Length: 232
Image (cartoon, rainbow, N blue to C red; front, top):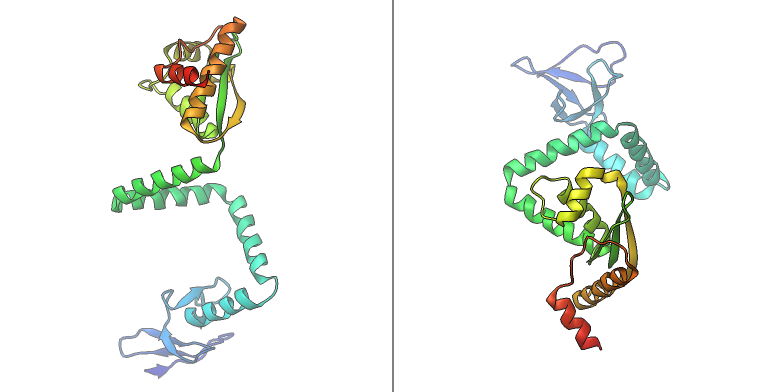
């Protein structure tokens, strides 16, 4: 391997092997490595388009700064956050590409992870009784959920889907008036206990019945009726 003549402004020693391939001596560790992006990070300001320090040395240098230099970690995180905010479309597109690739490689694993993530997300949100009101005719729907936030998302998904399973009267008004004519409200927060939620939902439905307000709820379930009788 012969050493090449230095170019103007060149900071590192370059070599050429018998096959004509170019190698570079890292300025830090002095190891000779092939001049390509597998061993050197890209840098637009150099003639070769690569850094003069190899990836291994760069990583060690920046990891030491990241762990030991005061304020360096926060500065990097702030720069990364600003970049993501300025390139949000690019970030989302890359995320979709990575997700699509993972689904193609291991669909069962992705579905399992999605179920676990969804369950963790639901556990973070409170349970309780909610009310959906049609602004056009004041008709209400009373419901209960262990995760109120996800329940409203689920309702909208079913109502906007042609084959979604939902309340027939609610679906009819949803199709007639549109999503913007419906209001979602939390009536009360409750523990994540099925029996408590069902019992309180039944009480709220009866309260609406007695007030004379038109409802989408036709009746309470036999399980709810039993819970109310046990509570008397």
